[in-house]
Each structure stands twice: as structure tokens, then as C-alpha cells.
Length: 116
Image 1 (cartoon, one colour):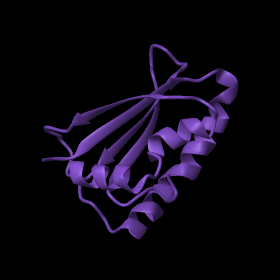
Image 2: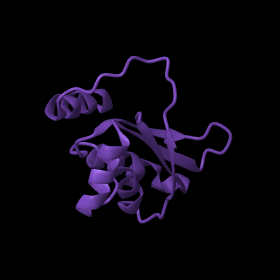
Image 3: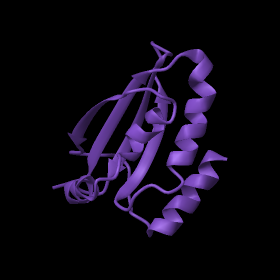
């Protein structure tokens, strides 16, 4: 089985946007092993609709995270702002990007550099 995309979505009031961005940066500094990439997005048509998209390297990595009892990092972003997101999952069938999974510490460092 291929990579898995988890999407968490919530309605975010404009006055909470900066808190949400800080929450994303905080939550993603130590994301679990198995996470390839996470994105924070705002809907172009509905600017109060925000999403966290998280790509997991495999269904097995996602299941191992669930089994550990830890909260999903993408849901945690919204929980830090006291919002309850709605989630969906999708199997990634094809991509036009070449995705490599770096060692966990390098992955966190590169994400931190990107978010600065």
C-alpha cells in the first residue's frame, strides 16, 4: 500500500488565524516518525476554512501511530486553538512529485527552516 493523506479541516475565525499558524509551527516541530510532510492551507473560496494535510509514508506507519495512543499531529494543531476538526483519509494513488523520506531529525530541521 502507498502513502496516506490525512486531511483535518475546521472553520477558523479571523481573530484565531495567527494562533492557528503558531499552533501548526509548534505541533510540527516534533511530528511523529512516518510523517513525510504536513501543509497548513486556507481555502481560496472560503477563507475561514483551514486544513492541515499530512502525508504519511504508509498505512502501517499511520496505524502504528494510532496504536501508540498519541494524538494525530494534524488534529492537535486545531485542538491547540480549541477547535474540533473534521478528518478524512485518502490513499495517494499517484503524484507528480518525487517524495523521499529523510531521516526524522533532518525532516524536522528542513520543516523548521521552511516555516521561518
